[in-house]
Image 1 (tube, rainbow, N blue to C red):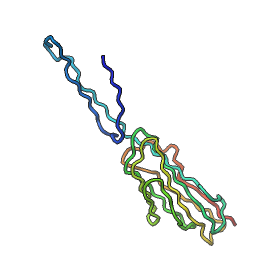
Image 2 (cartoon, one colour):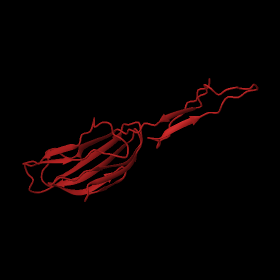
Image 3 (cartoon, rainbow, N blue to C red):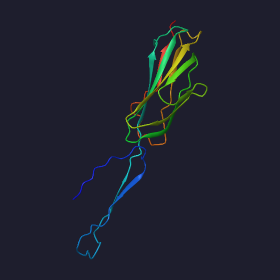
Image 4 (cartoon, one colour):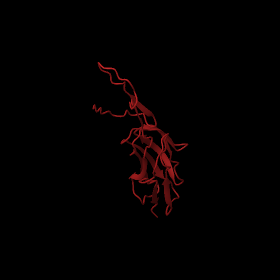
Length: 172
């Protein structure tokens, strides 16, 4: 018996990996190959459990008009597979004006609201901070900022843990 322990390479999700061995040979003849099993195939899990959470990183949940707020979107890959082609949509709601953004990975475009993230390895986390100011004339209003779930090329079997909204009520 020979046991060989291996690690599956990142980026192989969805692939079938086949390990093939040769027939054992020795000094004597082997009259038959009946019963020989020379291949073992495994299919690498293709699930990437992307958890998307939006929080108010900076600023009050009851801001004044003109106040600065920072929304943070965190995407964590809790799945077994590397997630590729990941993106989400975060159109800012009326009542706030875009100032700037800082992404730990990828690119956010304010005009479209699209955060193109790219690849997130299993166990990794990426963040996007969006800085806005509260518009004049919103006193007493509740402003809810909602993001879409992050999605990629792999299956995401669950939305457990996703928290996609953050609301503030403008001080009156």
